[in-house]
Image 1 (cartoon, rainbow, N blue to C red):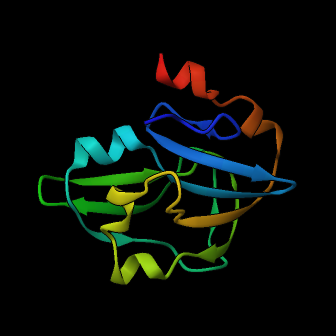
Image 2 (cartoon, one colour):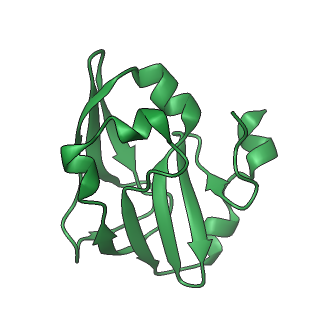
Image 3 (cartoon, rainbow, N blue to C red):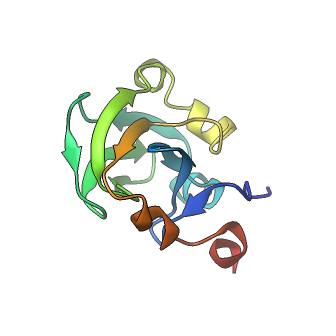
Length: 121
């Protein structure tokens, strides 16, 4: 699977797709492969404030439970409710299955993340 070049990535295997001061956040293909079949995803409420690197929820598979970490700080302005009913969509389309949208507090934080080539290396 190729990693979208417009996204930024964390060492914890989250991605963020930044558009202006908003960022859609999800997990990478590598992360979903490591997890195996995802059975449950716990996400924050709209309005939650996150710091960069802070846990914003958990993702549960048949193998393990993992924390989800915010690639940037800011306020959660949207949560993908579809994932509550269909968490397995993360396995089918990890780079299309966003989890939260964050209104980014400091856009320079995203600039410090890995690009697709750095992440794949």
